[in-house]
Image (cartoon, rainbow, N blue to C red):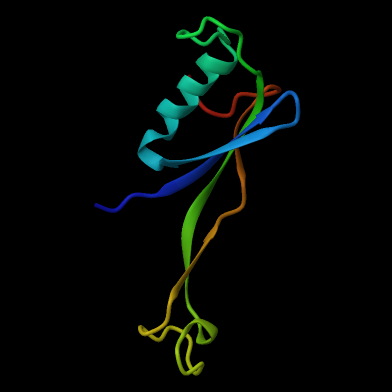
Length: 105
């Protein structure tokens, strides 16, 4: 099974952040649950306590950059199948912000 992995970062009013790894297919569910927990109604249903407010949610996608000479034993060729595949996170995308909702409810 192949799926896209997202790093989702919650940005809180107090300046702190929390990051989670979520599959692309679960992103919408995670965003909805996060906004229920932290903003509307903003109450933990198990402890009944008020939760920290989220002001922005961003995500990045894990993507392959390929195999490079510097990740391959012998240090000679790019795209050599003996090399280690290098991965990195894409540029951050805003999924939701307090100022503007960027996805459909």
